[in-house]
Amino acid sequence: MKVTAVSLSPDPFLLTSASSESTRAPFPRGRGACPSAPTAAADVLEEFKPAVVSFHFGLPAPELLERVRRWGAKILSSATTVDEALWLEARGVDAVIAQGLEAGGHRGNFLSEDLNTQVGTFALVPQIVRAVKIPVIAAGGIADAKGVAAAMALGAAGVQIGTAYMLCAEATTSAVHRAALKSDAARVTALTNLFTGRPARGIVNRLMREIGPMSPAAPAFPLATAAIASLRVKAESLGSGEFSPLWAGQNASGCKEVSADLLTIELAGALEDAR
Ligand SMILES: Cc1cc2nc3c(=O)[nH]c(=O)nc-3n(C[C@H](O)[C@H](O)[C@H](O)COP(=O)(O)O)c2cc1C
Image 1 (cartoon, rainbow, N blue to C red):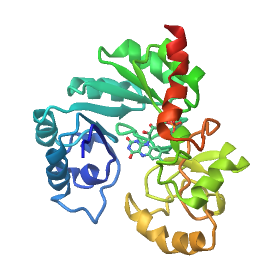
Image 2 (cartoon, rainbow, N blue to C red; image 1 turned 120 degrees about the vertical axis):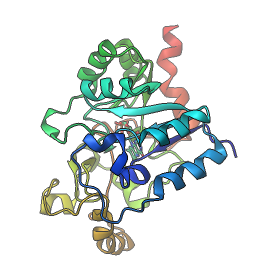
Image 3 (spheres, rainbow, N blue to C red; image 1 turned 30 degrees about the horizontal axis):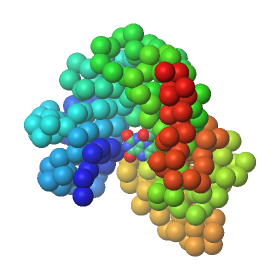
């Protein structure tokens, strides 16, 4: 098996980051933290030596980052503000992902937890492009070839797209999640901490409506996931996604039930035309 790119979403690193570079982040650490998790994750990855390793929520501890670098991987990480982009550049990342507020899934913010000051993609990308010297990858709300071309016109060196791929054959999107993405409900998303303990964007459902999408009652990341599990499993067994995290960005209009390679060719179409 050839692994070319890996996205390390926070869990293995953040949970144990007592010495992490992301300790400036004010988020609570999970009480269930396993001290050996970051090293164990690196042990597994090192066998495959992926060419690209992408982090979310800042960066792991410097010695761990150095280990990833030593096996030759290019290192990416998400920035949701100009300050975060500068912070990442100062620590030597090879490229920064400018994650706008529209993006589906977890917010990558790590220097501030104030969601009110988070920035939309088309405001964020040009500001980060101006501020840093490394390549900038635009993410959030990009759903078709015109969106890709527009992000590139703003100075992005590439784009990162999540939501549009979620109906692709290769995606492990659950049946209730697929149904929600195909419905009108997908037009209404919100940031919620109910499902994991950290803010993430998903389609609004009953749990979010009844408790309120952001609640101080949610257990700290990632304990909220276990807290909601029984309810979620029961509801899903009845065909309901009302208690499930239905991650999606603000623009689900690009979701298509085609193979991921076909969708990628389509998304890159405008770039080919522009040449
Ligand atoms: C279901 C889902 C899961 C995601 N998981 C991760 C992840 O594990 N690591 C990560 O860095 N970003 C993750 N993201 C964020 C995407 O990489 C990307 O920033 C985002 O999807 C771009 O915005 P869009 O959803 O509007 O295309 C996820 C997004 C979605 C929708």
